[in-house]
Structure formats: structure tokens, C-alpha cells
Length: 109
Image (tube, rainbow, N blue to C red):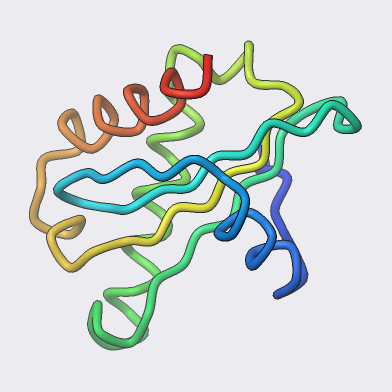
């Protein structure tokens, strides 16, 4: 199942400017409550500092899968969030990444 994603740069900027900030060892996150949404929207940022294209794509796949398998996934609604990945996301065990993302998503509630 594909995650609903943010498409425009203006959407990313809005969440970064108005959203609540969360810091983790493997990513930084911004989360913004939006009453107009029925579901949720996610944006994942992997800059070139992360590595080459293969490493960036792998990091994004790991983050998407951690969100998808998160226990809060079915209860996510009316939320937009942006995850800015750090280089450590490639080295951290998947279970730890998943726990960090669950902590981040429960941060809004």
C-alpha cells in the first residue's frame, strides 16, 4: 500500500514553519494537525548528505516501511508530517527506527 505523500515544496515549508518539532537520533520530524484532512500526509526528505542515490532510496524505503508497520498507522488522521532523515538511519536497527517513529507519531496525540 502506498502512503499518501506531500507533493509541493510549499506543503513541506508550511509544515516546517508551523508544525511541532521532534528530534531523534535517526531523523528530525515536524508534525502538524490539519482538521481539513480525512487521512494523513507524509513527506520524507533524504538530502545528498545521506549518501548516493542508492543509500538515499534505501533510507526512504526503511522510513516508509517503519511508518506502514507502526502500531498507530490505522489511527493516523488529520495529520501532516515531514521526516528529515539523518545519516544514522542507515545504521540503526529497524526495530529502533520503528520505535522512534512511533514515539514521533504519538507526540501529536
